[in-house]
Length: 272
Ligand code: HPA
Image (cartoon, rainbow, N blue to C red; front, side, top):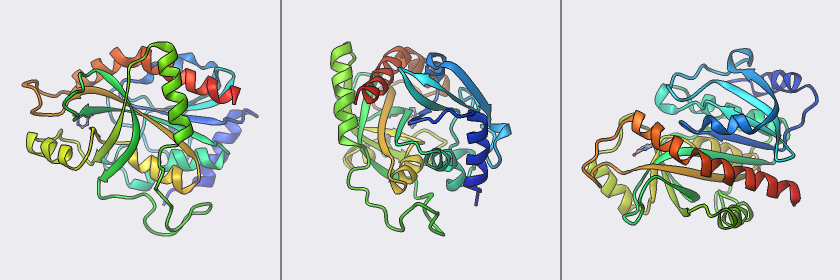
C-alpha cells in the first residue's frame, strides 16, 4: 500500500506555498494543456516517493503546478493504468495526494472509443456516469484515512460542473456530447462483439482509465468533472483498424477544443 502522506508531503514542499484548488488528470495525447499553466513548477514522478514511472508512449511523468485562468492548479501529466500492471492503489495514488493537498475539484480527461451510433469522432464527450467493467477497485482493503467504507456513487460526476462545462462549450462553439463511459482493463482494444455488448449495456464510450481515479475522488468527497476525447469509433463500427498512434493523433486534433473547455471551466470556478 503506497504511503499517501509521504508522497503528499514531498509534493507540498515542492509547491513552495502554492495551494492548488483544482487538479487535472491529462489523458493520452492531451498533454498540451500543460503549456497553458503560468510560472509552472515541475515535479517529476521520480522525485515523489511511491509514484511509479509511466510506461506508455504519449504520457510524460510529472506533476505541473501553477496558475491556470487565475486558479492555482496542479496537472498530472502521465497517468498510471491498470493495464501497465500497476496495482489499483498505485493508479489512484495521485488523486489521494491531491485530496491530501486540499484540492476540491478534480478534472479527469481521457481518450476513448465512441459507441453511440450517431457519434462522428473525433469529438468531445462529457462523462455523465460510468460503468466499472475493470473488475478492480482502489478502495478494496483497509479504509484509508478520510475515506468511507461504502462511498455513495449516485452522482459520480458533479452536476454543477457539467452545467458549467456545457455553458463554456456553448459560449465557445465547442461541440460537446454527453454520455456514459465504460472502463475496461485493456490493453487490447475491444472485439466487435465486445463493442456490441457495451452498447447494449448502455455505454456511449469505452476506455481503459479514469474510473479508479474517480472512485477515490468520490470516496474523498472531491467534485469530479470528466471529459472524454472520443478518438475513434469502437472496433467493428467501421472498417478501420485501431492503433495507439491513431488515438494519439485524434487526441491532438481535439486538444485545442479540450484546452478551451477546461480553461473555461477552471476560469468559471474562479468566478464562482
Ligand atoms: N477502446 C478502448 N480504449 C480506447 C479506445 C477504444 O476504442 N480509443 C481510445 N482509447
